[in-house]
Amino acid sequence: MNAFKTLDDASLSARRVLVRVDLNVPMEGGAVSDDTRIRAVVPTIREIADKGGRVVLLAHFGRPKDGPEAKFSLAQIVAPLAERVGRPVAFAADCIGPVAADAVAALKDGDILLLENTRFHKGEEKNDPAFVEALAALGDVYVNDAFATAHRAHASTEGLAHQLPAYAGRCMQGEIEALEKALGSPERPVLAVVGGAKVSSKIDLLENLVGKVDILVIGGGMANTFLAAQGIAVGKSLCEHDLAETARRILDKAKTARCDIVLPVDAVVAREFKAGADNEVVPVGAVPADAMILDVGPKSVAAIAARIDGARTLVWNGPLGAFEIEPFDRATVAAARHAAERTRSAGLLTVAGGGDTVAALNHAGVAEAFSYVSTAGGAFLEWLEGKPLPGVEILRK
Ligand code: 3PG
Ligand code: MG
Image 1: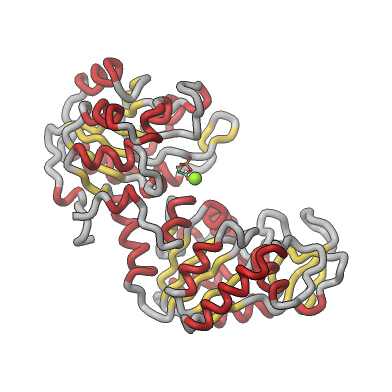
Image 2: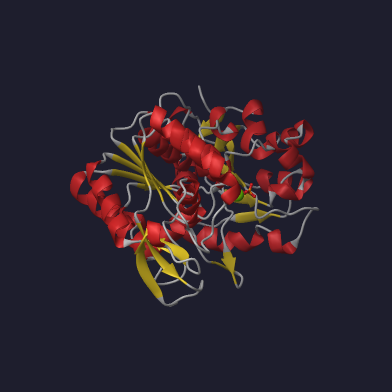
């Protein structure tokens, strides 16, 4: 972390500290259904408050298109946040202007205030200088703890760092450190497991990874595209036939970079996409014309486990099969549990991230057993693509 300014470098006592957090949590029936992102920013909030800083939290919620809307209000996050922090959290119904200024002025050292959704103002996503200035007027110091939003060059994620002394919060710091260990200067061999439905959403990611990792396991629906590109019939499986050329280019690039690509050798196939559907295991060369591949088969899982055993570092993004419907979660669960076991017994560094991935690891019951699970979806993907994240870059010394 020597390259970044962190809370260790900041003077916080009696300062108004603008802290960008990611509170973009999923909701179900009016309640937070996964509080991972809230829990992730608690240490930063407490540390700043304990050091006598006046904590002013900035965050977005959802994607409001046209100004304030009740369903995108951060008011609904105040209570769950206060509960996790274990301290009172005040709320202001606007993030700039007199309402925000009065709420900030009322803060005493160690108090915590959450401001309303920054995306209720158009200037946020435009990174508009006037909006940045209106935010900056509320603080003396800026801390970014929102790694999950660091791929956005918005006013509260990037613009503010030009106006105020800027530091990484502890969640941001933890993410950067874990990612650096996994792909920046990793212990080799490095193994990447990439799954998910489509190659089209992960072309850049795959192209970047084949140049960085020693072994790349490809699973999920996207493996079908690679199999088909090599002339293997995949029946009715999800497959992007128009990306055959892209898939072959990635395979060629891997060969040049001496990255070993591991594709499934067997598959679990079914005639319908539904939980409990009749299914059978077939070699990948024998997928019936009327069947679809819904998971990688047991021989493939054994091969992945053997690769995990030989690795020192593992980066995981995306499920190996249709893990949301049983029994097509088997390969994902088995491989994830094997990785968790190697983390415990062999000191394998295991880093995972990206929306579905965390859900899959939770489903397998191993999220806690991995070395690090990122709070980020899109930002984690862009980082795997090798793209600089504006919210991170601006925090460099
Ligand atoms: C996320 O959930 O991916 C982040 O909070 C960023 O949200 P966005 O994709 O709407 O910018
Ligand atoms: Mg996103």
